Length: 162
Length: 191
View (spheres, rainbow over the protein chains, first blue to last red):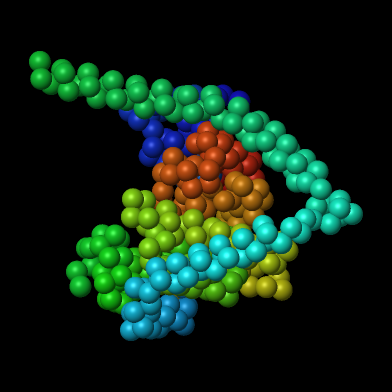
């Protein structure tokens, strides 16, 4: 489908389209069989998931409740900060130990050289940049639609006051 | 305890020593969180374990939930991370379709209610199978946003924040998922 309504259709179906966008999608739907097909597919898939609603086992729920009652009776919720402080102090001691021990990574291990992780970072950055670029236009449209709705709401309010 | 208390109020009550407040919270969110985990893993036993993991995290450290965010968003973030850890431990995504894969049963075989809902009654069996197959064809990223939206009911903006991606990425994944579903279901869909 290359009518350009893909993301707009998603916002429309899930009730996140503002008034302006909603009207635009409804106009478009009248003449686009592919978009009508996508709406029907989404509706069917959502219905399928809803029909398969299920619950956790009673044993799982009871296990959580037992832990909750135990935590309350032990008062462990209140000692949490004490434990966190103790962990923090121990971690600081360990870090200080590493810093002052003067031990570096063995030179013969290639994966310790940082080259590998450096390449991973570059690859990840490229992927991230590509993803961001692809999203910019949709973000812009989404924000435009929100602004359009806001201006419509303001116009309506001003009209009502007049 | 009144059930209409907000999530934050129930957390505060739990912190104050009321274990039943945690029970009410779990009751409120269990179907959504469990459904999400079951759809991701395809295994009721794994979903049960992960479900416990999510709520035990809240029990052990209720302060981990920042009160400025929605509890639901926090629960689904923890659930997603727990599922990712599960997949890492398993070495693969390991999902099975809703009806199982022949050897392993699927979530459909463990549906809690023997009485089908109105939506299911409207879908014929053949289409149901086709839908399960089509959903299984979605990429992990598409499935992730599709299931998150269905079970959490969070807005796309909130989902984008949760996944640390732009909203355009979330919408693009959803749109590609919808296109794939339409292609797979084709003429089986009415209308």
